[in-house]
Length: 229
Image 1: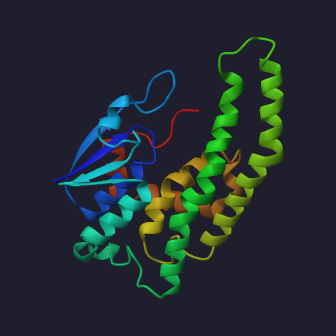
Image 2: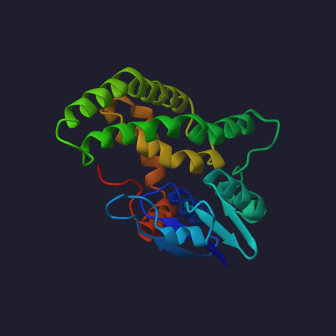
């Protein structure tokens, strides 16, 4: 039996989605964020030294980091996966495999950096601080958002939307590892886009994803994907 250590409203939701699609049984251990800091609880450090989520435990094997877990599950269960996951890892040497590899890295290597910065600089002015500092923090954070973060988030949204205008899923016409890795980033990017309707192909992609029964089962077990604004 696999065990998934899952933090609420976090990237580990995509691991639950993949396991539901694979129809692999697993034990779910849920962790709540600190109500003040919104950080992961210290209990996760007992599972993995980094104290982050997700963490997958398979017997004596402990795997951290979403991308590594997705690849591990594809290697471990891909051969016996349902027919609709026949392209979970596209055949090596194909354009689909190259696309899959790109989006697996893009999700965390480029996109999530800007989304996390967007959240941090949006949160800073609302944190406790001396009253005379707050206006300065608000102005500085606003400038960083305007000049640096929002243009990069917008460029990422345009890039993904144009790509999905050409195909159903990130690596082609079939669901692949890339879609599980990109799922949280897509949800977060649209939530911070300011105007979701500007990205119709991303919206259609999110709808296809959210309508999948396995995705809905993952939500029932793991809870909402994103933290409330």
